[in-house]
Length: 403
Image (cartoon, one colour):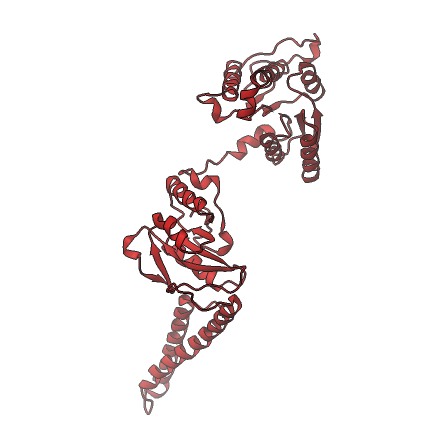
C-alpha cells in the first residue's frame, strides 16, 4: 500500500465501475429503478473511488513524510530550489539527463532511506527543457555547462542517466567531472535493464565499456568450453594481471588440469591459493619457472602434456623496457620463441598469444618486441611436430593441429 501508483488508481476505478454495474443490474431486475434515484449509483461510484484512493494515498504520504524527516533537511541557503542537508554524510548530486530515465531514478533516490543524496537538479542538452522542473527540481543548464556549474555549486557526484550516450559524449562528461573532482556514476544500458525497470540498485561506477561507443563483444562461451573442458591447460605468466585473470576465467570451463607457469614466487603463491580455494575440483599445478629457460619449459611439458597453451608472460612496462631493451628482447621475443617451439614439439592443439595495442604501430621497445613475437607466432601457425630434443620417440605427436 505504500507504493500506490497511477496503475493502482486505475485498478480501483475499474473495480468500482464493475461493482457499480453489477449493483445497477441487480436493482434494475429486482425493482426496475422504482423509488431508487439514479444519482445514487454515481455518488456511490465517486465515493468508493475517492475513499479507497485516499486511504492508499495517505499511507504513501505518511511514508514519504517519514523519509523526508529521516533525510534531515535544513532551510535553503541562498540558491532557489536548492536544499542543503544538515547531515554531512549526504552528497550533493547532479543528474545528467532529464528524460524518463532521469525522472525515474530521481523518484527512487528521493524515496529511499538508504541512498543519502541531495539532488541539486538536472542537466540536459534539450534547450526546451532548461528552466523547467521535475518533481520540484530544476533543469539547470546544458550538459556542456557542467564545468562552470561545478565551480558555482558544491557538487560531489554526478549520475549519468543517458544509456544511449556515445563514447565521445561519455568521455567529455568524465573529463569535466575529473577536472572538478566529481565522482561519476551511471546506469546500465537498456540492454542490461530487466524489462525496462530502473532501480537505484542498478547504479554503478562508470566502466571502460561505457566509453567504447559500441556494444560490448560477447564471447561464444560454448565454443570456448569445447576445447577447455577436461583439457590440460598451461598459462605462462600466470601470476601477472592478465595471466591471473585468464586463469580465473579458464577455471570456469572445468579443465582437468591447469598448470600455472610463473617465475615470480609471491604472485604464483597468491593465484595458486585463490584458485584452489575457489575451484577445489580442478587440479591446479603451480610451476615456479622461467620461459627463457628451455629446460624448465621442457620439464613442465614433459610432466603434464598440456593441450592448450595461453602465453601471457611478458615484460610490459614501457619506461622500464626503454631503459633495459635487451631484457625486453630476451623475455618477449626469445621467451616467446621457446614457448612456441616446445609447444610444437608436443603438438599443442591450441596456442593463444596475448599481445598488446602497443604492437600495432610500435614506437617503443616494448611494442616492437611484442610485434616481433606476434610475427613469429603467426609464422608458426599450423606447423608440424619436431623431434623431441631428448630423442624420446614416446613424445612424438600428430602434426597439423589447429593453433
